[in-house]
Image 1 (spheres, helix red, strand yellow):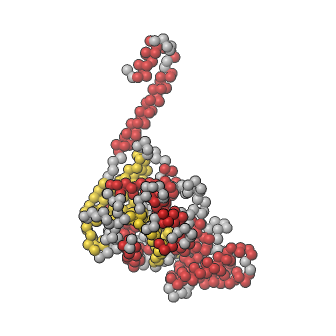
Image 2 (cartoon, helix red, strand yellow; image 1 turned 90 degrees about the vertical axis):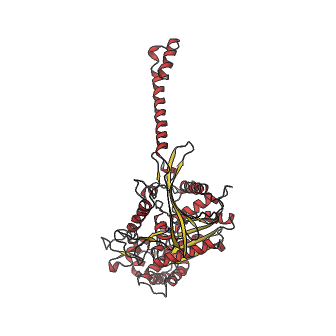
Length: 514
């Protein structure tokens, strides 16, 4: 006899309730107990299903001129709520020199998005293998794509750990997990920081020098994770360095909302470098084109925008003429745009006479749109020019070579995180003016040996180099421990062979000089 029936029988026998009236309460109670039992069963089933997969392979290669034996490990890290409910699986791919040396630096890396997997940095820049795609801003075409040994990998100077946050790569949220628990500025940083601590625990690497690096939104994540790991919680991990590749920390420079003149000032040097590359602006070099535009942007151009409708006609004419020289756009067009040209219009307008659109991630790339007369591009030729090669390479490497088994699709650029992202920062809201650079300043002020490396491509409109300079020269960021490096490519500067080698050598020097 079940407990509800037994209870009803005894109460009735004792005369405490009438038999005819006893069914209602016990049956409702029984239903609740049944639902609770079902929930417990479901939770137990979920826990039984989610088992951490760990695959390893021992390999070797020559990196930075040094022969290195290493162990490649793909591992599931299962994150749970306080009550033990499994909420997320975060997959890491690590490459550790053998035999293990705890004195070696560990470099934790991730890409951006939000929603981007670590495929780009792993298969394009620093992993032991790389995908070979055209280096000269041409489309990558179709498979097969060569996956080659990567002599520019940083394995000669550091062990590497590539992290795919939930919704990227093979990582995911379990069924029923609320997106806001992991998709957001603070939630994402907490999850990544937790995985870093778990990896240090599992590998006995707490006393190793630790470097943290990201690309694009990954630089935003770097600032947030650094605050989680170094933010005065009395549980610091003691970071040695931050590596920011294609930096976006202060979002005011990227959003040309009405009245926000900073976005136009920040974008101008990128317009000049793109115009120079495509033969629409004259300068001895791309670096010189960038410097001319910097000076003009901070001086006459910024002053003109801030004066608004009080700008005198002669000053407007002078600014318009120089703006035309730097950007390659006609004075008539600039006048009709009120001296303010958005990135989207510039991609379309610069080479309109050729019927071509330039790239956003890398303005060296060109494409042909369906509507040549349109105001904005159909797509970004610098993205569809490389994505197939990277997606094929990461799947081939992780599944076929390293032996990771899953039916899940590898999310090179996952939509789910971006669609659900919580941009508010400690409840203050993003608006257009999120700025996480102060977290880097705070971490550096509280850790006298923490240094920051910044890598920027001259042809990157997604995260302009001038915006990175602006965000990191603010008060509170120790300038003697911040170093900038520039490359003759775009957002993913490592797609250009010469810049991949230069980027790796620059970071190699940065790590060695700790």
